[in-house]
Length: 561
Image (cartoon, rainbow, N blue to C red; front, side, top):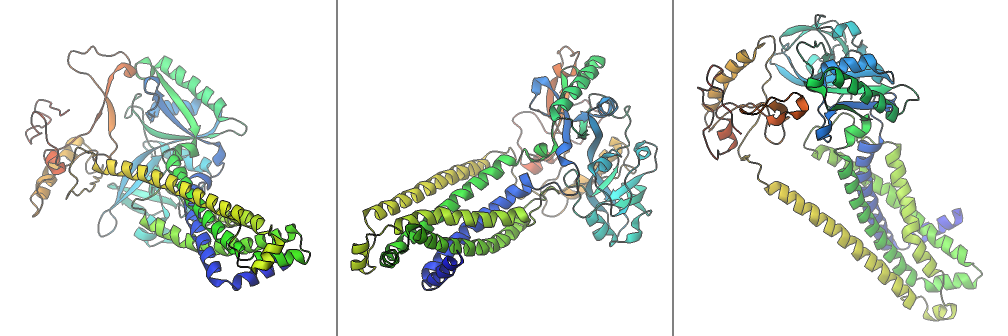
């Protein structure tokens, strides 16, 4: 085999134009495929960083059977009951997304974070690089406030100070003791930078208020199906004890990883399929090049056969050339992929979840090299078989000038047809995607985003403990914003259009009979806005009037629908 490879290298060196063209075609196909595979690898294949026992992690949420497709989250009292009663879970944790404002520097810094039950990080298997994790008693509402910092907050806001543990830092207007620093890359559940204990009580978060995210660790040997059956039975008992809020409410249990990737899985696989079509087109191109090259080498092959070479030896020699091309193309394609992955990551316009990492690993290298080797067989076998069956007398007479017989021409025509079919399929798919994209771009959002800027304001709860106090802040802020030169209108909302989280609330319309159970209530998505918000968003009213400064809490209640 080594002799065949050495001979293949010599023959390819003699045809530099062909060799470079073939290698470049292979490299482009493998490079594009590898970049696409890196997305599949990052989203679907790579283990979540720093988590242990990932195959036993499950996502838990409550839902009403009337709207089974919608997750409701989990209420705090129900989470407490599940933790007490579940025997199939080795660990159970809950969290709530939160915003934290640090005011220790020259200017306040705002970070996304979470309030999380104390034992969650322990059963996830992650350990801090400095300090310790939360203790169970720190979940108590009256416990001294403590926090864990993310690695980037520690580095960027505190200069990587190793003495940060034990230091008190003003967070949300309170002096909070820093007890640890989490490892680089840890931002559970998605993009958190600071964590504090959950510290909740049922009187502040009654049953029927579904807002928590929940995760569980199955005991060894326990299947998801068994855990689901037990947890749904627990949900049934809770519903029987609290029919006003929990009738028709059940508990959903699914793989934590499946839950995290459910929104991106289909698109990821679609991208991979499209790029595979591109790679197959590249393989067909190289196969055509090899067929054309084989047609000019019929005299050479005929001489080898006349000297006693078997057909198998000839095929092996020609496949060796394909293998050399495939290996060279794989190496160059891998370099293209490294460059392409870097460009792709820089081009992503939004912050991605912490567990999606595009680092090169053994899967990406194996894919690139494996694709190159498989491609060598795909694009090299048919040309090798075709070239290994020369008509000896005719080929020797033609002196290598043959362009191939009718069968060779049919093979080339077939490859051309395959290329066209693949290209058309890809083109049609791309056209449909483009049409869908343009339809989304041109769809009426109900707002005019042109020249509209958004920003978030986080108010420390210590300084603004009451809604009325926070309301007065915005009553003063918005007129000041509207008075800035160049600003036509300003307003505030609890949920930005199209991208904000809108809460769902039970509503009672005048004249309706009050429902006995929450599942029978009218449900509506609601957001709170200030005067000026509609004008700032370019939203026009069909009927009626906008809110005005006179619509205070002491005035008659009003609403827009």
